[in-house]
Length: 349
Image 1 (tube, one colour):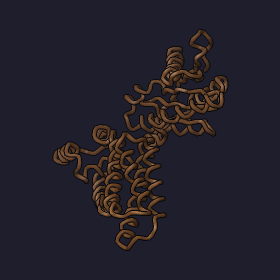
Image 2: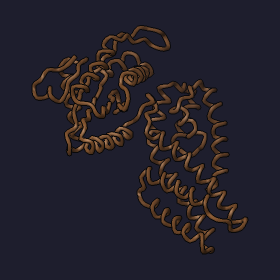
Image 3: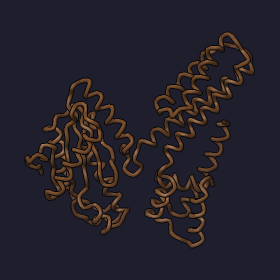
Image 4: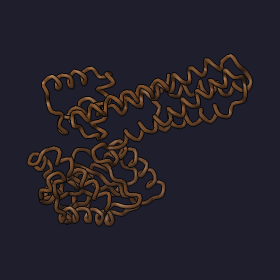
């Protein structure tokens, strides 16, 4: 892999994408940039044809249109980026093997490590394993002894390349766990975090609760005011919910207009209190459109809460939260319901 060439290409694409976005009055948001970076790179033929056709028709690249382009052509790119990084790392390591294979002594251990690492990356390696492989090789490459200028130059080049790849990997890994619109964790990050929290709760024998939050009548709100205002509502709910939950509590976008909060070391009564604080805030807050300052009224939420039961599958835990949420919505919305309410208790709110 020629990393210097890759960096140069990236800079060229940036210099092409940003002026083009400015020319068509397209805000430089992560999603919009992803679309136009992909376009100027020329790697996605279908995207290029779609945008070229829009140029010919003199279509306006509205925020809504850019969102459609993103979801159609770029939304599934994160896993592909991680796969590419894994393949790039394999190419670097195979190159190193060819350089050191003719030597003996101190490089024998190094060559064995490289070969083993290539084999590990041939599998469906987890993100944590890839990170550990890169870190170990960087450490061994820096500590290897003096062998001659050619090999030393090659090893330094390899170290620089691996470190650049490591930064690129960390960036891609972070991006793949964040919801672009709201800036909080996405469903994948939630699944990973919930598994860790369940493991900790099982080990510590501590309580663990889950809140599932749904914005009431969000579809009607979207239909009445448009998707741009709808996106602002999602950002507003995210921002205010994040201010209410504290400490180790973990907020993520579950999908659509649903959010989820993981509450470690929290009993069901405590989870109900947190949920009621969230519900109460939104029931009293007045929403105003950012662009026009027009009063949009109130946006309320319904919330379901459940307590983890040791040994149960994660899907069962999530499903109980979902059932409680369903009860809250069927009971009139703008309410809190817990799993105990499913057996005939009272709903909160």
